[in-house]
Amino acid sequence: MRKLISFCILTGSVIICLYPFLWMFLSSFKTNREIYQPTLLFPENFEIDSYQSLFSEQYLPFYSFFSNSLFISGLQALFATLITAAAAFVFAKYSFRGKSFLFGVAILVILIPKQAMAVPLFDWMLWLGLQGTSWSLIFPGIASGLGIVFFTQVFRKIPNELLELAKVEGFSIPRTFFLILPLVAPSLITYGLLHFILSWQEHLLPLLLLDDENTTLPIALSKLRDSSHRIPESVGMAAATISLFPVVILFAVCFRKMKTALVHLSLS
Amino acid sequence: MVLSQYEKGSLFWLLVPFFGLWVLFWLVPLILGIDLSLQSPTFTAPHREIIDSTGTKPPPFSLSWDLPENSEVVQGDNIKYIGLQNFSNVLEDAKFYKALRNTLIYVLGSILLLIPLSFILSVCLFQLSGFFRGLLVFCLMIPGLALPGVLSTLFYLFFHGRTGALNQYLVVPLGFEPVNWMMDPSFIMPSLIIQAVWRWTGMVTLFFLCGLQAIPNWQWEVAKIEGAGKWLLVRKILIPNLWHLALFAMVFLVVDGFASFSGAYNLLGGSGGILDSGLLLVTYVYQVAFPGGSGRFDFPGAAAMSLLVVPVTALLLFIILQGRRRWVLR
Image (cartoon, rainbow over all chains, first blue to last red; front, side, top):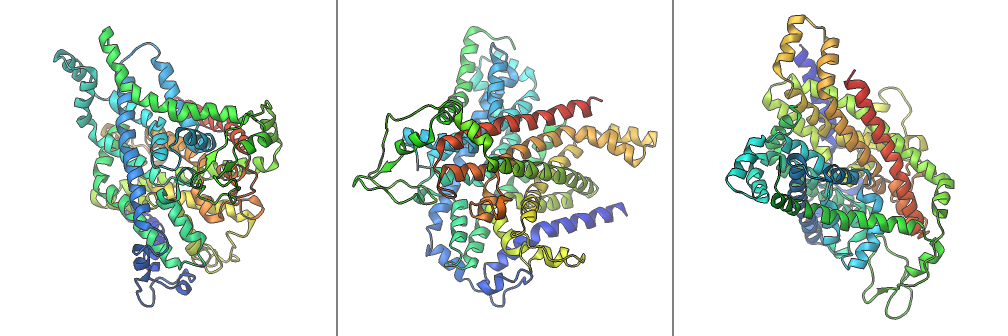
């Protein structure tokens, strides 16, 4: 009985969550007139014009926006994972003078997010000559405070004996770190994914920092809507559908690992 | 672990990448921001004027803010420091308070709705078997994976409007008048909050579910032997075990809420909506600094505003972390 009730609650909320996305997918085949009737689910006839005009880059260079987004988010997530993991490894396992100061300073990043510093960041990137390039977006995201918190918790669970063993074997500390990395692979994947999503969704910084030809998907999508009177709504819907794919696929592939890592993390 | 001098040196190589980037892309912009916030806007603006090679002024910046070819930023000496003038300007700005209040409502509203909702959903999920559990939580997470812009577009096209889904399926069947979500000032904030809840519920549910799975079995056994009631189970096992995950989620939501921009930007086109009732802090900073909104081009004012938000966020996080002491250690 209890199972039935919870099953009903869950099914209801899943439907609420997913129905709009189904509507979005089907809307990419609709005409404008049909889209403006939100209660209509199925289009009268499936027109694939929207996908054609998107991929033939009739309105904007969709391919390059898409690959830019992938490039920026992927690289940022990769660097952020490795670099914050390295720093957090040191914080979790070794003690040295000034450690708590450095840790506190790293945590401060959480307090002042990079979006709040968009204006001076813009100036600074201009001075560095990076403004407009993808790197101006990749670099600021790497030093992440949440990553430090997350990985410090992860590495605390690695037994000290392993490190002592590595020391007896004569491995240097950086080498030890790289040897330990495979042990925390689920956590690395989890954090990498979360970081990927957050930078995939970033809107303000690309809007300010990137050149038009280097823009990312969120900007492209809002452009498609901005001029919505010129561009059929279905094109925006098609772009939105496609923008969902990489993240959902990545998530589906790594979902199990992610759950393992989170369960492990909350065993404290 | 005790380290030799040589080993301490090698720690350095693991820390350097992080702190190098930290200094370059966090500390330097922060210092620049503080410096900027002390400058006079009227003296600073021409210094930032961008002149292309022909000497003509470029048209007002487009939304994407691209520099024309062959242009250079004129570095003038005409920077004038005016002390804390910018800060007091911001503090006298009624619109700033409006934005601050809206953001606080947005953050607190989404937390208060999200945490209990995800708690209930995760307890429900916990009663199902493995395969369904994974499948359903994955489905719940899909809105969190979508771009916020997509969510607000969907909100605009699907949910809102007189014939929209919210009105058709919820408001009218309950016997109320249809709500004009985006045009009625008192409903803009709720619709932003609904979007936030829609977006993050799945993620927080997953967190809680993993926390539930990590509860050691003996706790349930003890509760069974003692014959504990449902309410006692919730209070003595679920809440203490999930509290630190809820805390992490709250910190995340506060930080994300204060930095949120994309949803409101897409929904309201960079403006604050009717009577500015959907104006969030980042949107306002954007309006002040860049000519998307008012065209004030006030870099120093924007920098001062960004800095003034920091104590508010810090206070909120502090309250949340204090709450933990009161609740968990009791």
